[in-house]
Image 1: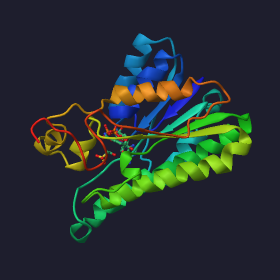
Image 2: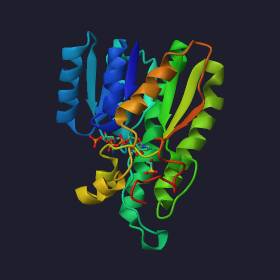
Image 3: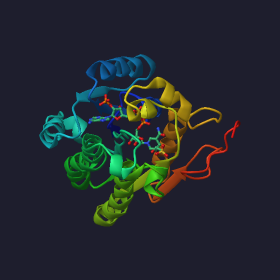
Image 4: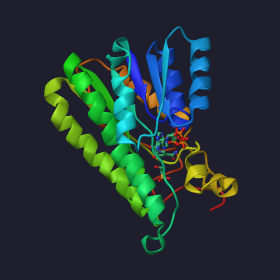
Length: 252
Ligand code: NDP
Ligand code: 8X3
């Protein structure tokens, strides 16, 4: 079994790679930071008897995505599971104060990047007659929150695309699942706040957020179900989070 994971250099993607390697999957890991891909590959190979293929590229570059998938050796093209995970939030501003470069980065990565990867891998799955595409959406794809405007819109797009992909691929026996997490402590907030660690740490203060491993556990669950069972959509939050705007923090 082979899993293809985008955004495996940190956070959910890295945990999912380790978890599925533990389940016996050979893993293809992608992301822009090549050194982190190499060190994850070493970690996986040291711990599990599986093979690893590293593929550094930027999901925003349609040609790079196409070349990376086309250049996979034949044996690596038999992809059983695709995890569309690469994504980010940049900034947290009202629309009227928004930064257009931040908007482009989010739309290009979260929406167009997911489309480029899916466009190249879905035909391989169709050819082999099976596959499972797992899109990492967000609770922000179910509800919006103040100043979350464009990030929330990109994740609403992932929500819509997940439903559309399932319709398009059902006749080919391909499962399509969305996992929509709430707040999880990864590099997500550090990226959103452009390296401001204090602002990032503040997001997770006074409650226990999800961890990357929690989401990897959900992925492990959905890929291990019987062949005829497809989880369509899972929203998962930590106990303290009711929705995008209400989190039970110890100090109010
Ligand atoms: P991290 O910042 O820890 O990981 C993001 C991953 O995406 C990294 O591996 C990064 O790799 C990759 N990535 C970002 N931009 C690009 C790009 N242009 N090309 C290729 N890879 C890219 O955050 P998370 O693990 O938290 O985020 C993973 C997904 O989960 C995202 O889609 C995010 O929106 C979603 N999510 C996160 C939540 C949270 O609270 N943490 C909650 C709900 C959803 P590199 O920088 O090396 O390119
Ligand atoms: C990440 C969750 O609520 O911080 O997608 O936007 S949230």
